[in-house]
Amino acid sequence: MSLWEYANPKKFMQTATRVLPVVSVLAAICMVGGLVWGFFFTPDDYKQGATVKIIFIHVPAAMMAINVWGMMLVTSLVWIVRRHHVSALAARAAAPLGMTFTLIALVTGALWGQPMWGTWWEWDPRLTSFLILFLFYLGYVALWQAVENPDTAADLTSVLCIVGSVFAALSRYAVKFWNQGLHQDSTIMKVGEKDPLDPAYYWPLIVCIAGFILTFVALVLLRTVTEIRARRLAVLTARERLA
Amino acid sequence: MMPDLGKYAVPVLGSYAVAIGLIAAIVALSIWRSRRMKRALDAVEARAGRK
Image (cartoon, rainbow over all chains, first blue to last red; front, side):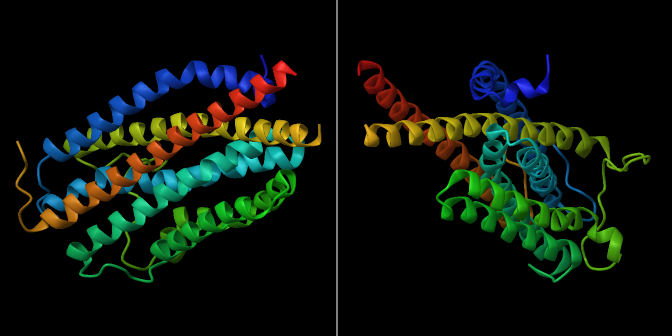
């Protein structure tokens, strides 16, 4: 079985419809379980007090903000190289989700920053690159809406996605590149390094990250199926008008 | 049951409220659009099948 089979809209819809209930249930379990565990059953940090509980939202949302753009980059490249409509529609379906995760990361970051840094916002490399990433998401969604021809829209948004990938990468590595500003480098999941986070925070955080990933997978499947239906509806409606 | 958040109640509860609100909104919007599109497509396909 080849991955390219899923470029066939019918095959994609059949598989998505089959796996969607399972992924949705797992997403709900991990998301609710992780957030309840993190909020109710973790101790206050000796330095940050109760604000440490924001980690269970802020970190998964920020990770998803960058990784969703990465997924959009891959599907956009597939569209440019192989012209598979499903991949272009998957990128379109993912963009509002990535935008939501970026907004959550920005807002929770500001709410966390105020009591810890004494400021809601700072023109720090990571914060600034995240804000630019959010603006790229907005532009991407707007461009899909603005261009009437779906193939032209897919071409233009794919190019925008490739350009925006620079900022997605900067959002991830800005702290390393410039080594300045208020925002710290990643605490967990660093290649070749042991996670320093106490297990009391580490495990609920892992469950929350799984919850965010699964929620994204469930929603992107649902939304891609919706986009495929919308495309077919547009074709049939146009055919009806001509008949 | 409710943890004592002390002076950080506003940022912590605010963060959870914003995140849960936004995620609930995007889930609801996705489901609503999916159902609307399926209904519309079913209707057009039914019409096309009758012709």
